[in-house]
Length: 102
Image 1 (spheres, rainbow, N blue to C red):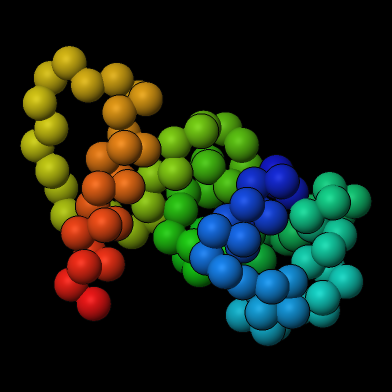
Image 2: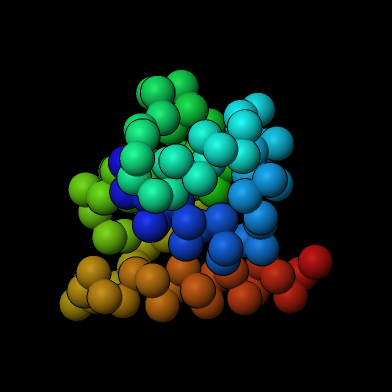
């Protein structure tokens, strides 16, 4: 797992290491160890992380740089010609729309 990616996800959501540890039922030391790349969580914990941040396991593991949601109930028909670089911008726009509805 990419420890830096976990740290970025945690910080983007405003969580502290103790917050993340609580959400995952882990010790703070375990979270620190994952973020520093000193140890790797088991598969069950990786899935918990993916569900918590709504990201794919591929993104968490560093296999892709696109933070595709784990759960994506809405399918959008996007126009042709978009590149992978456009997807984060689209996701950001969707997030803005959803945040405005809160």
